[in-house]
Image 1: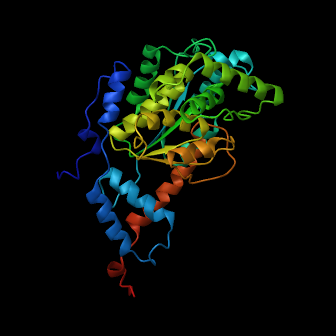
Image 2: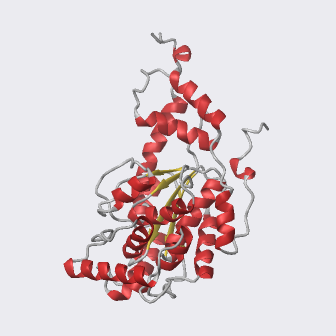
Image 3: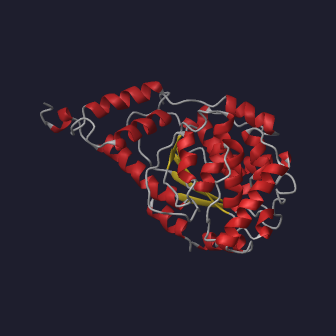
Length: 346
């Protein structure tokens, strides 16, 4: 077995993530892509049976994916979709159009195969794993202090970290949690500044949106701006912390990630705030209908693959975008070269 034939997961050790300092140490040791595989993939792209650049962004996506998988002619065969669910204390403030018990009901729906993400994951040939995080124990109301203690945040982060299957070759992280657009907007405001991050979420009316904005302002006042991971604990939820853990673990295993919408991007933002290149292994799957999502992606330097007006969460937009990435990889790895096809290359 050559070095390139070895499973990528064997290259990265497990880490004892005891606290925020340990997570930071892990983030400081993030591996990068293979420059050799990227160069070989570009060389292959240059001799495929098409005019240079004819497949547009698909070509750069294929090279990006090849570099992270250390394989100039990769395939996507074992994608994984992770859905994390958590309950939020601020939901009691009327910031969502749905009651908090919907979180647990939707978890049951995921496990029964009845949600949109079930259909999209099946269509993509992806394994779907659902993790409910202490639904009987909502996070604290962050208008009164931190939503989670450091220990609670780290526990949720570790859940996400451990949920990533090392043999996976692509990861989608999704969520379910009534009130979590309020949490995501508060995180964005704390890390990027401004006070206009709140949107309609699941469909709140004008009074609900006003409550949302008041809640975010109170949360920021009660939790002065800090680092990305500290903001995650102060204003986030368990499902956001778990998504952050999964995204970070995927990087340690060199598994490319497709980010979902507003809430997933807020979880990723906390990693980006700790280290600006922490999301180099991730692409934005889609632009959510939640108005501020585009600004968040722009801040992180992410250009979405799709813009379909989606605002469901669950990983649904990213699971759909997975097919775009698979198309890029299949064209790159499956097409014949000019020499192989006996076609004149001009």
